Length: 224
Image 1 (cartoon, rainbow, N blue to C red):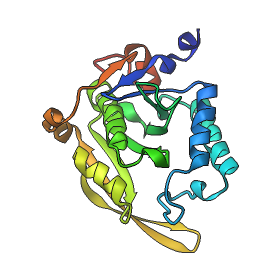
Image 2: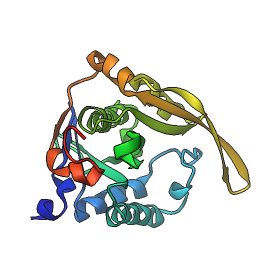
Image 3: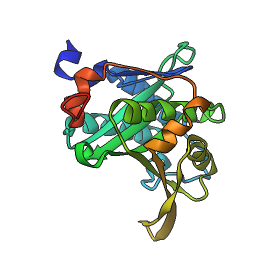
Image 4: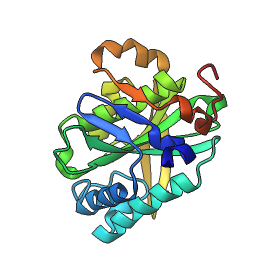
């Protein structure tokens, strides 16, 4: 079975409305189509790597190549877990977005970085917040992360709002070049203590299949 060779395919996160898990190839194709259909207003530029500014086919190919690359390059000390976001009721016919956790030297540093995107038609319904909360539950409650980080352009008010709602706080800025333009991002940090303090504000999250995946994250077992 696929899960015997690659245990991460057994990892599943269930929130109130969503299921997060690694997609199979045909489901990745669906994710590519979501990206092809559009992820944001064409006037917005929410990503440092301007991958959404190409045509529909280029966006779809970027998603497929990124997914396959993250699996093919996976190492316990350098990993990126790109989870597809599925509505639990099946109403959309497949995945509607992706949330990613990545880390280097996680067993030592115990920090993860998050990023995510949703199809444009699914914005404004709290799905992005719920999906990221599911991924953070895996990181904090099951993998023993001490902090989660993210970087957001200062004018990306939607993503800023998701982060603040989940308890992230300002942790400095970053300046990056995109072509001839210098862009400023807010660095945001959520600590494990802050995550636990806000537990009563969140809906329950169920995570299954973690034990058999611990070595993939550089962990030897629950006590690692």
